Amino acid sequence: MRLRRKALVLTSGGVDSFAAAHYMQSMQREVTCCFVDYSQPAAQLEYQSAQKIAEHLKNEIVVLKFDGASIPSDGEICSRNLFLLSAASLYANKRFSEIVIGVHSGTQYFDCSSDFVISANKVIQQGSGNTQRIVAPFLDWSKADLFSYCNKAQLPLELTYSCERGAKLPCGECLSCLDRGVISASGEASL
Image (cartoon, rainbow, N blue to C red):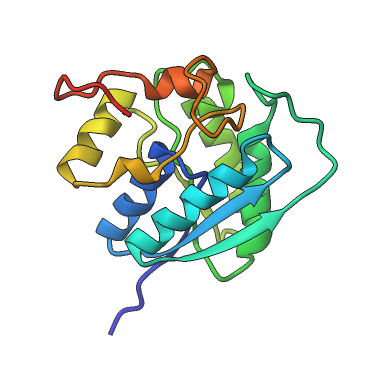
């Protein structure tokens, strides 16, 4: 019997990471969700959603906690995805061959681009002695493509949370809220 590959999926509690975890399961991976608390304003609410996502998908969830960073209340967090991937790689060690991130096209951040993923993947592969690689299954997908995937897979998006400010009711103004406000491919407004 062939062993299933193990994937550590960065899970922030949002739509992108929910879709990524589900997608990797559909690709016959043994998925573990990984939530990183780096003292971001939304950490508590993101973690609650990440837990719900892991429970829904019947995945284990691990939490990595880091203190000391100066995090803005909203907007771009420089090198965020590089940090998240590095933290996941450090945790993964030789237990996971794939580190999965749910970045998609249409964002203005460099650390969501194919150039970034290619460069970061080279570093992770070399740094791990070629035992790990980055998987970004939605790199060429738009947000509308992601919503379409979630609708077809019947993922309960009400479990997700996406607001950089950490407001109990999403603010509707930060870049994460605006990104989530995209109209899905079916023509229905997202959550």
